[in-house]
Length: 289
Image (cartoon, rainbow, N blue to C red; front, top):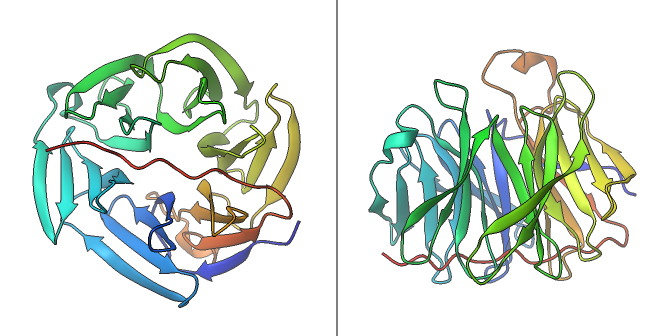
């Protein structure tokens, strides 16, 4: 596999949520604490800011009409459309002391949206339905993180970073329900956490490693088959991109707790040619106002 290269050393505090948008052939990603969404157009070689708010943005999806669905602090969810912010949900009481974290659109256009832990150390997973209703799906989570769907849309993967585990669920695409939870993999290394993930067209799971400086690829039965090293420790997420979904983009973080000067590549956006691995397109959300 070709070595990862840096697309832009933009030094994100917490770079996250890489998402390929096929309609404009561009990659979007987020710097969570400062609420900035960036865009990279590979053909033009240009990186630009497309959204810069005044608050934290924990995750985002792209809607069918090209607007952005933003998941923010205190359970707020807003739509960014035509340079205007439209409130969908102002406030979610159970999330008053925390924020949304990783999110993913499901095959029907609903959005699974996880959270950071609250003051009691509890994180949650919600499902935002297409009519705007927010439903609690899981609680008693350590830190809700990377998610993905099997190619046949019958399974969903979900990461609990604090517990160091990735779970696999039976997924009902008709109503978005999850059942039959099992541990898919457990990270045994101390201080190294599974973070964002994606699933390729062969059903193999790719998981980023916070503090681990690498990506891991697992077979559908949870066997590690590949490790890709990167030159910075806090690797946050990845996605497949490009015309044939054979390009991989990887986000990273400087972190909010110092140590930024020790790694020049911390917070950069990386690119990796996948050498035969093929990804799957992400779904677009269909949440109505």
